[in-house]
Image (cartoon, rainbow, N blue to C red):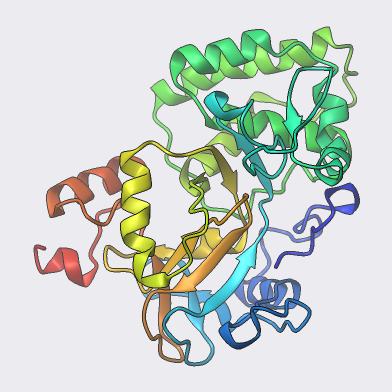
Length: 335
């Protein structure tokens, strides 16, 4: 698990990691700052160890995640907390504003009527919320709502975290960016103007906003667009055999309660017949589990989309959404 258990003490995991550093260093970083709770000790979280994976270059898909030992079907490979997360606009009043857990015992902030699932989450949220609640976000939210936008909410939260000093402005730079069309960039300019205006009207100083340039905003959105995960809570479902069918049902029901960006999960490549899957049980903590037996040195791959779609639909969605033509064995066979 990433070592940002308490957001109040969190510093950006890549604060001192330069883009020019090698993938070997990246692999060492991930191995030394994550842990896993394997199937035999999952009931005892205190017994943890480095995850059985490494990040290395693949032959054709850039960086990928590989097994360092045999991994059994159903095994919990590792967990990860998000770098940044945000509830969807339709879920703001029904999930925790920090961890996205469904609300039962809600603690409501008087500033903007957002709610938290616990006193702990409310305290941890102060790393961004103390900055966020100073501004009037009505125009920004309305624009996102009318345009059907979700990723600007993540950019806003990250900007608040940078201003509060707990995240580096370059936190996402190591992640792969999406290729943006001129139309996408033009739309982002409107979002960017609304974002800066909200901070400006809240008397945030120019020094605090020095990083908040159009170039920064576009770069962050380019990385969020291709690396963000839809958070769909599986509730009590935990049997690995049901994970894929559950994911398809959740997509069909538009059950996403928010979005989040993670570090290690962002390095998993796609396969339409994946050997691993990410599931969310009760909050935004991502759990990566093996869907079948995985051999040592085998690449671990997840499915970015609904795996039940037909070949042409998958190819179109992957190309339009992620910018590549899938050449996994399933697609090559025409399935």
